[in-house]
Length: 147
Ligand code: DQA
Image (cartoon, rainbow, N blue to C red; front, side, top):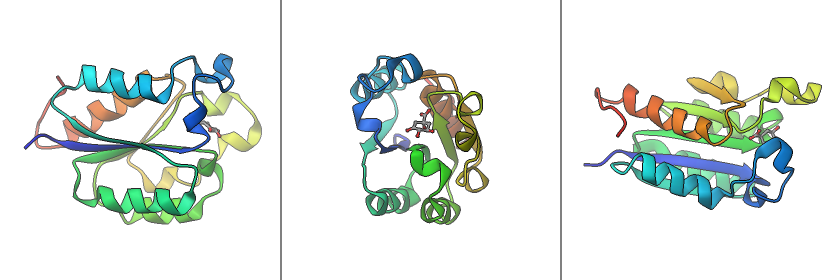
């Protein structure tokens, strides 16, 4: 069975490509999805975006039977205890991804309330961060390697 990996994108990430390209790059979410599918042809991706916190919590719960999850929560990173709790309850390899280096920006972006509920954090690598997260998930699962 191909590994199924959830790649979840939170609030405002649907506008990637137009939104502050000097910070977030020029790729759209569709571009990032295509890159992942090209780089990891064996993976079955559940690639999603929502601006609704409750819907995101539902997606996280749905990832329960998956090989793992990569999540860019957008601004929810900094204040959503609901997302923290949903991630804490999820027992699969989980990675928090940020396109930008949140530590180099405004003070309030330096704090993530979701980090304590995930296994790893990637920040500042742009779209490569998503690929790194997928590789991590694959390597955590039954000795499978990316490809
Ligand atoms: C972000 C960083 C967050 O602070 C911001 O609110 C985002 C995107 C990133 O990918 O760098 O929406 O998660």
